[in-house]
Image: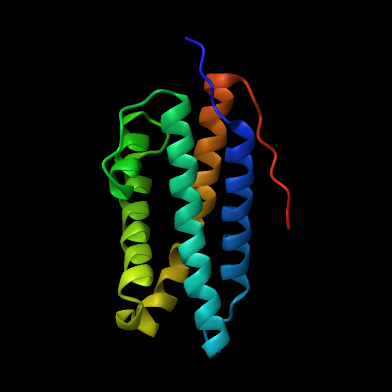
Length: 147
């Protein structure tokens, strides 16, 4: 089967995700300044949006089933063996955080926000699984650029 996957868009979105992960790692969790909190909130938001965008492009390009929402996109990526189950569960927590940052931003606790920093490796895991899947299915290697 011939797939029409927008690999360039996936590469760009993975670059954004990589940048978000890098930025989150640069924040000192002991400092807890207002600027750092805003940076964390925005980085988490963009990271999840990037992951969802990558998932959407893959679902469309590889002709996977239609998602019913953000959490369903993660389920589809798991069902199609793009990502493992353990990573899927962790990503769903991030999707739920994103919804709270967008809709209920005044209810997000600072301690909770900083605790998510312990999960930063999941972004790189996601990137690696997507790159591996693209290489396996399309034979294309995705190179990311540090920004």
